[in-house]
Image (tube, rainbow, N blue to C red; front, side):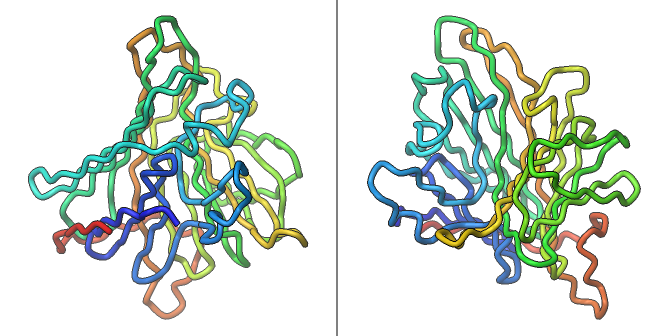
Amino acid sequence: MTEVLRVSTGRVDLGFLPSLGGRLWTIRVDGTELLWRDEDAWRRPEGAWINAGGTKAWPAPQSRWGGPPGPIDGAPFAVELTRHGGAQHLTLTSDPDPATGLEVERRFVLPPGDGTRFRQRTVFRNRTDHAIEWSIWEVCQVPAGPGDTVYAATSGGAPVDLGGGLPVTANGPLRHVPLHKRTGKVGFPDATGLAGFRRADGSGFDWRFDPQPGSPHPDSDSRVAVYTRAATDDDAAAYAELEAMTAITVIPPGGRIVQRLDWSIVPRPREPGSTSASRSPRRRSRSATGSSRTA
């Protein structure tokens, strides 16, 4: 297996795969894993797509570059890990990709505090001599066990069925998608900048991002999309994807587009009876200073 770069924020342990598309591969809080990952992915036949899991940045629409395997998904990223004012800064940068014209940079800032929050910025740079047009597409693979759900906050519009007829339930502005034993995809064109994942035990994460109303997005103009894949007889992998997309934007030569994702990690509730998988984000105190290690 490729080497994992591990960074600790105190309560939360993050693991990155710089050599495989610069992905964030594991998030563990209090010993609970929040991302789906395939430990056996490297046993695939040579030339096959290595779907290792975790969360990664792809260009959208996928039809314009053909999908994986490809340099953006599987090539090594350069690594820089530094400290500034008590915060840990990790930057993962790809080589320019001839197929898309993009250089991809993924920056993670882990501030001092309670260790449950960190910032992510993904940058697409145009390394060609002509204008290109892309959307930043964050693809986060999560478990799809009994009781696991994802959610997106919306302004009340109808979701878009992108195949499979996934059920969606409403709780105020939140739209919840159950993940277990389902295959399909649904989009949320009116997502308002909050989405997340909850395991059945109440642990999970929240995303905050910048919606771009009035601009075209991939997948029937969806700002957030949810894909689920049920296990099959010949492949036991069952997982889901929470996806956040920027507007499809023309990038001039030397120009760039940026996607903001602010993560809030939600530990499993410790109070008796507090197991709601759809509860709103809570305020948490900041007390511990993070530390880092690499392996």
